[in-house]
Amino acid sequence: MSARILEGGLTAALILMGLALIGATFRIIRGPRAQDRILGMDALYLNGMLIAVVFGMRSDSDLYFEAALVIGMLGFAATVALAKFLMRGEVIE
Amino acid sequence: MSVAFMPEWAAVVIAILAVSGAGLSLLGAVGLVRLSSFYERVHAPTLGATLGMALILVASWLYFGTAHGRWLPRELLIAVFLTVTTPVTLILLARAALFRDRTEQPEPGEKPAPMDGDRPEG
Image (cartoon, rainbow over all chains, first blue to last red; front, top):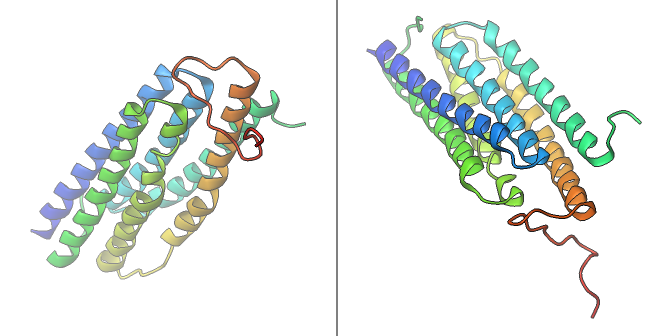
């Protein structure tokens, strides 16, 4: 019984997160300006990280936690680099 | 897909936490789609970045604690890292957007917000 509750709840959470990914992707494609696309990419990284955590619970595996950690760090680095690029026109001065 | 055995109350709590965290993330994404200007949209994903992230990480901590007896606070790593970095990235992004709106002609419907020290004198 508890396995069925868990399966159902975690599957529902995965579906909701997938819809959130679609929203972020819509903002990346639609724009209208570069900062909106970067904001969408940041949301995409965040939701992807949370999906990795939920998927690790659902498949009862430890391995997805490290993946989530790495995705979070890459998202931070990517968004900071792109914001700096918008500000200055180059990343490393 | 297989989930581990655990008591029912833990399964119910974990499912509720995961679904509400995912629902908050979805709410943030809906705001990202629906809001009209960049300076409103920049607030929306922080719903998922703060409370949604915290709820899902608490669910993960409870899951691995009750299912395998590992009460390690590993999720605290992600939580602390995200809490520290999200404001930094969004402030940098908002400042870059302000800079672009000032140096270029703003598009119709994209109203640049006033910044401190930039108000008219008197």
